[in-house]
Image 1 (cartoon, rainbow, N blue to C red):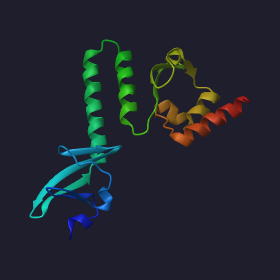
Image 2: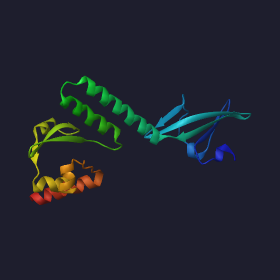
Image 3: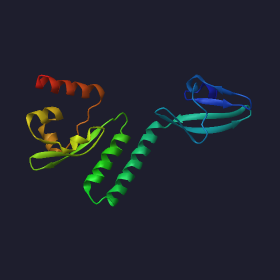
Image 4: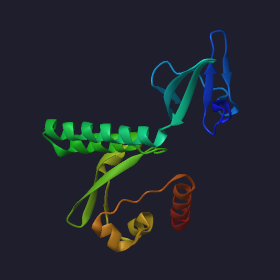
Length: 177
């Protein structure tokens, strides 16, 4: 098989030119062992050949996301050992979670005390929300959307893009706004 026709990005680097295949069109030449382009990460392998050097790029984006998550976990564990108050750790935890989850823009952590839940950490929302308190009432259960059993077990609610907008619009409609 001709590497320039392979089903992965490949370059042929010659002394005077770079021959690209269509899958690699527009990608810059990596300077090291990896190449990051937008949200994708490639592992670069150089194969010497008589006609030049073939540069193969294997997409490893999923591994890069996993590595970022592990690094975040290590930072949170380090924070666990450094913070005297749990609020500092929770703030670090939600910041790292939002940074690691692809496409995440915001997140929050609520802790239960008796019949009430208190917002103790948030990322991407107004700081004024940190004084927010809620109880297990019909409106909160509707907002949560996963039922009372999951609420009581502390299962997180994850809404993305359009689902988040629909939930917000439904809540406004229930209030008559």
